[in-house]
Image 1 (cartoon, rainbow, N blue to C red):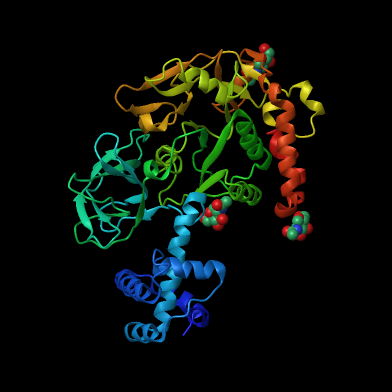
Image 2 (tube, protein in one colour):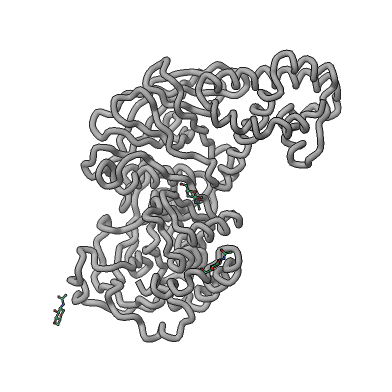
Length: 504
Ligand SMILES: *[C@@H]1O[C@H](CO)[C@@H](O)[C@H](O)[C@H]1NC(C)=O
Ligand SMILES: *[C@@H]1O[C@H](CO)[C@@H](O)[C@H](O)[C@H]1NC(C)=O
Ligand SMILES: *[C@@H]1O[C@H](CO)[C@@H](O)[C@H](O)[C@H]1NC(C)=O
């Protein structure tokens, strides 16, 4: 009997049942069945068709799904299957398999099915895990991005899951506090899971558990970027979690496009809450492969229990997520731009800088300078077709902040262990921060007075039209996006807001 028909006939029931029955015991039964089935099918197809034996059963199912062709099971196989499994169970398994495959694909594209916050059950205080990365730079370990109590976080263990039928292995974990925590109850953590030298294979997944026999409540893919990417090239940008239904459409497009003009290739963003228009634009960028968006729903109260939606967990996730894939990574906010003042682009500037101290450099620090939004707009901007903040606001505070105070970094991820907001907390041995003089480049920061009110407006300022170097390119890039995506995103609904939004 064709599997295809079974899938369709039982699909609705299957989906409902998935929702109903996604509990642990079921999961284990499922794992067992998958394992059993894969053995069964490998054997069967081996006998039936020698020619294409490099395909596994699941690859065949997938191929079938992709091409919409049917795989007709030989009668004796269908009979054998029918004895061990009901049709509905098969539907569930097939659907779940597709879901999990989808996860793997989407991960690269950064969709909703990728890493997300999951809880560890059985701990005294709340304990969450987000993602896991293989890190063999010093000792070989799996580094899990987590959030837990700042003082005396619960001891946990790591349960490694392997492909190829190896049994899982459980090891005690080591909690390493990520140092920036603002004295709140919860902090970002690295949960370090050591990989013993004796292991002949690397784990595919890891679960963080409160004790040896605790219930499995999380299931993280162990990312192995080093293996999965050929070389680290180009520039990526990381931004802390987006919240308050972030919807500054024009600011957002301006941020992406100006950074692209500077040479950035990819953006990694975290979705706490995003407004309709920005979300629609993000989907277009994602479809173009330029953006990764990770869901970011951490069950802790922002600013009361943990600093700004756990931003230090996001920054460090982004550090490891981009490692081995991008050579340089910017860690900035949407109202900040690291602007080259001597070179024409960040690529050119970084190419020049890296040759000065090729071995020692771990990251570059760029000084902060405020372009206060209360200051008047540049008269030159009045003829622009769009309200772009970097072209309208050209008055900047004369005095730069010293490095480490509000400065932002471009890091070489492979050389960094722990990232902070304004500087690097820990480098690999022999690597260090290089402070960049403002004549080469600095951080343009577009915002209102930092201490509230208008006290800042009387500080000494200068006019800085550096961004006008890229004016035409920038205006054209933003206009093109708005024009191309208006139809899908229905910007007309906000066209009046575009002015209001942006004029600050
Ligand atoms: C952001 O997350 C919400 C769910 O929390 C989801 O519905 C939405 O599609 C996500 N947006 C993007 C652009 O990823
Ligand atoms: C700025 O300076 C002007 C003129 O000296 C003064 O009238 C105004 O009150 C000052 N504003 C603030 C916010 O300090
Ligand atoms: C687009 O926005 C307009 C104005 O708000 C609204 O009337 C219209 O229904 C929207 N169209 C779609 C397809 O959402």
